[in-house]
Amino acid sequence: MRLPLLALLARGPAHGYELKQDLEQLLGSAYPQPNVGQIYVTLGRLEKSGLIEGEDVEQSSRPNKKVYHLTDAGREALHAWFEETEDEPRVRDEFFMKLALAPQTGLAEQIALINRQRRQYLTTMRNLSKLAAAENRDNRIAHLLIEGAMLHLQADLDWLERCQEELE
Image (cartoon, rainbow, N blue to C red; front, side, top):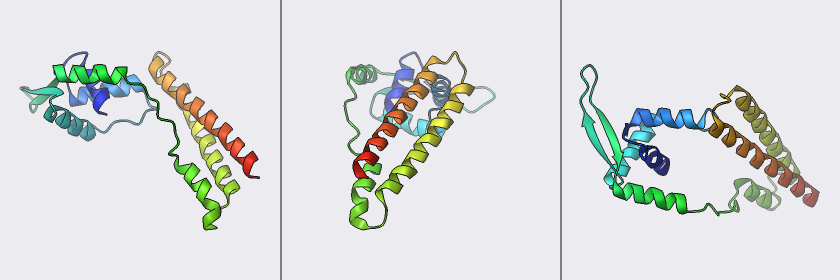
């Protein structure tokens, strides 16, 4: 959550609830909705680390709000984040550990595990399809997020097929 908040603040100053709304609007309903408490805790940590600065703004009919802006250090951290690639393969997969250890424990059948996981992936795929149909067509980012998740699920389903062929 740290770097996405920095990225939103690169546009200009904002308070925590605005940032929450911006994330929700940008990413749509497929992305887990951020908790406003989590956002404020993260903003506090970013401020403590010198990546953002907050300023209390008085409001006449409401409690004061704190508006945050990006510091030079925050802008540098953001530039570094955009330069990084995401190259970590999914070799630390919880399901694969279950699949590998099941025969040694005698507590689960590998094919039953595969079938259960397949059902879960298919249910998730159906839910994502419903989300895609309900999502605002103008929100291209949300649609790309859903499409990416569905493509990953399809790859996972293909991999489950490969596992089943190998283990039967």
